[in-house]
Image (cartoon, rainbow, N blue to C red; front, side):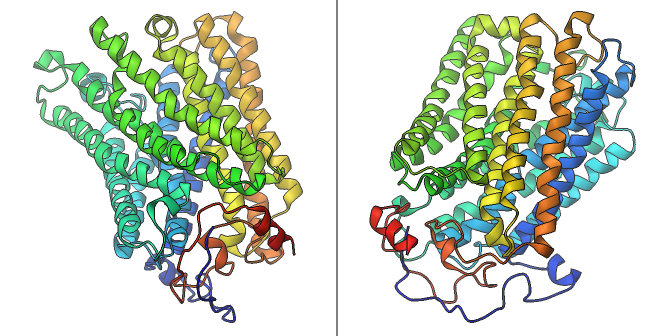
Length: 544
């Protein structure tokens, strides 16, 4: 993408991993790369914990009569699964791990603007996680991850406050991370790194940071109000106390729908990098993709009402939210079209990161198209709160985000660790995950269309075949998730040493050694070229 005017020193073997040793050096580090690895360990822990609850849910739904757990326990299982996966894995995964590691490297900076604030963000995230883990140990929470009132504020006797405090605290981590990214991107770009020379990964994180800063305080306030009503019986949401339960839904979804884009926008940023590298072509329509990220961030704040089509809001409000929701499909479709156009006539290679990128496009397209069904007033009334909704948001949020996260992790793993993973196993895992995911969630579209409601632990016998298919798919998916963890850990000890740029990729992060030195760039690079410079001349030079 760019050429430094000065050669960076390559003789030093000191890197960010071996510059100091001991637990203290990690717990007090202000290096963005080490903090990214701290997040990597944390989100991985929460991912497998949330996955454990998912396993129990699918085991319970193997039989129509709910033979494994009682209804109250089932309520707690799907609530803890949702809370942990959304607030402690899907939202932070890509920004906190890949974003933390890559944003300074990609723009030619030595670190984020506020390194200590970055470390504080991880500690806040960890503290919030501990509160939520404590809630799990003490019996969990049964309100659903949406915490709908007045059930959560008045009637539930589970650990609502402990879980809410965990989420409330974690929200500050998200805000601080977004603030740090925004300031860093504005103020610390290398000379010559103009806005339209930024990698699209950076544009995606810029748009995500706007949502983090503007949206997260709203859900924090909503949770705070739930606590006030629960502890002091102030009439905010409970009709018996003079409150309005729909007010909570407005506040909650004003954040929680944009939160979908906190998950998916960074994922789209990853896909941009993978598609260009493994098709060896410049991205098609760079400006359209960059501005579509901003458009998604803005439009995402205007569509929360489509979650409330059946809650009694006026038909006119429903029509407005329906149209606005349809509009979000436009910038999303722009990205998919431009990725497809980039692949067209590209020299495509099917290495593991590319397989994840192609998997992302497939799952995101299915999720996006089914979102149009839910944005249509009449259809939404039919499938509202059924498994159709479960399948839709898993295709978008889980399928999309995890495929991109794993694709990005494979792509930058050599840079992060200095080691190469086994490519054959990586391709096999990508295939297993794609098959397992579709077998898990596609039957749920049919279940929802046929009328099976979500959140029920018993169901009519005619739904069993599709539920068994879904549970079988979940087993395959679980194995697929375990395989990368095993070979990533294996590669740390036995993997071959990674070269500086194993993919022949463009971008400043590939100009530094693998793993990078502690301060990224001993000499500030000067950017003189456009991003994604996969011209025939540069490809020929790389081949030599």
